Image (cartoon, rainbow, N blue to C red; front, top):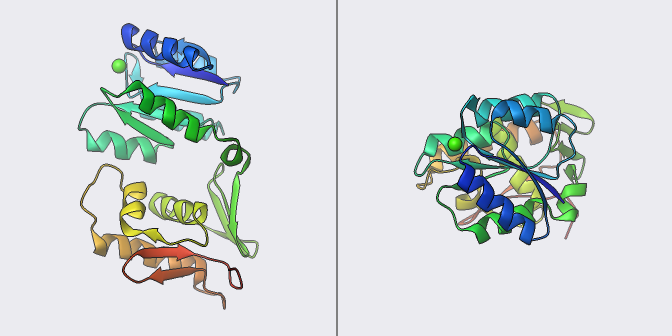
Length: 225
Ligand code: CA
């Protein structure tokens, strides 16, 4: 497993690199956005750990550029402590996860392992019935018809599909789509799920998204246990 660590703080970069190497990863480091862009061009990495504040730009711009080029390498962003905006922006830019500095090294390793889980890595297309979501290209379709999703709708649908057949709590849905905001705003959540529902189930006889009273929502294909 090859990891690229993009971090300009030399001590921290060395600490992460040393730790990940000990965990069996093969690690490269980049100290600037420009350096990172060169290294990620080949798309040879299984994981990227990226600091938000880089000397020649910010991680968000770099990440957005990567995603635009179709680079779907999982990215863990390192954000400044307590910066909710950073977390939200990171996820909206296409980050798969984030860590707030300072973080425990074992947390980084745990998150890296989750992102590198083989089953998840090979599954680019999540589905329930005739609904499909390509998590790399972020394209959704139902019965072959394309559905345009907002970032929030994508996040909500993704987490529901990853738990297809099982209820996803309001707290988990909120945490996934509104990262960094602790208080669940039920109205806002319901509005977004409502819009998602209309897009997914609006014209279909089989309703995939179900309300689980007292818990949250679940997505399930009809006839499935
Ligand atoms: Ca930095």
